[in-house]
Image (cartoon, rainbow, N blue to C red):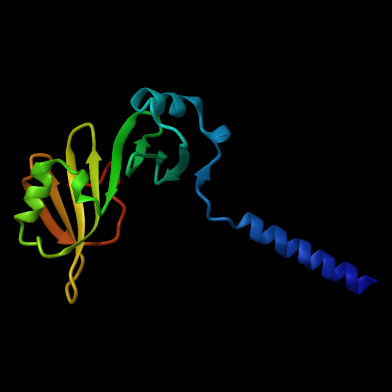
Length: 165
């Protein structure tokens, strides 16, 4: 009997340990302060199916719109800091001047892995993640007029509102 109780106790403790070690950084809707929900509603009134999470010091609202995924970043004061619109590999969704700039770049024959539009209070820019067999993956930064800002090796790091461009 003591052996069965000991096994049951160990099983319950193990279950509780796994439950408490979740790496889930998502916020339940009820845990998101109202000022963040209001700020999102003011910026994107059409947003539905919103999921919230913490990234660094920011609260990030995630939702889908048409063929894109949108992350809206807010600072701790619930002020808009950045919007990241993920186009996936869909070049056809981009403004013509951005697609043309990529097609005329030295990376035109590389495979597009992902395209994002970053909108910040002070600057908007596109980032293309591209790859080519035998080469290191690259990130290509373009202004919204199609001018290439820079091309750097992909460091697999998130671009935060505070990341320099």
